[in-house]
Length: 290
View 1 (tube, one colour):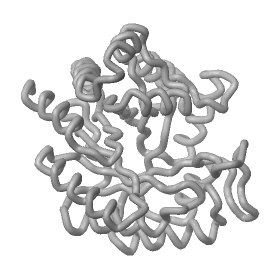
View 2 (cartoon, rainbow, N blue to C red; view 1 turned 180 degrees about the vertical axis):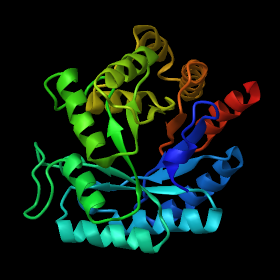
View 3 (cartoon, helix red, strand yellow; view 1 turned 90 degrees about the horizontal axis):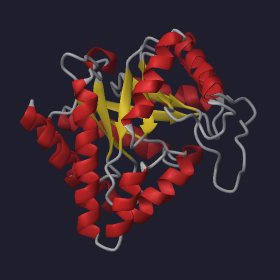
View 4 (tube, one colour; view 1 turned 120 degrees about the vertical axis):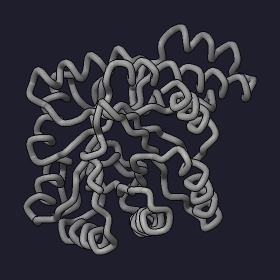
């Protein structure tokens, strides 16, 4: 199933993102999480790609296992980091041979210890180039990409960032998923600006339920997401109470999702951090109200 066909505001889908664990025990734990989330009938799940292709084989193995064993549509992330065109073509062929129909194409973050992104000889500098490459190679993938409601941390302005996104979409993207955000105003403003410049593909909001105070502090520093003042103050009050942090995070994300759904989003993509309880609580609440 091509993911673009399940992104419909009249019947929005829920989807979940996982990352490839480094150990066999971690993989077993992740597959249990997938089983726990399966009753929620996700439209799809996605598996990320480690820096420099460090999890390349595991990403391919996991998306193949999930699709073939669980019957859930699985999308593989693929980045430019550390790869030549030939290596990327090889990964795409493996995914195609395994029956994977959907890929999320990204430039990727610079490897650890590297301040700026530098392509390897024979590689790509931008996600736009990777998208164009996949289209020119005549693969039949449905292609997703990333977008940034508050602007990418490396771009000079939100307007510049929007032009970069338009170039990626024009190169052949079918849909985009946003970076995490905690204030829906950023998403709605972003969609409006994107439509004005001619970006007409589905824009799926990405939601990360807060389950750990230090973790959310780290993530927001990395990606530049804004935590609303009221939520920040509430988190500060309960930061030493792990259960209270989870309850607050679930409540905030549930309210976010309710508003997003009421205003016609094509789906909601949850950054699960390979854990199911918070996401199950949120989606269960949302399905109970539908």
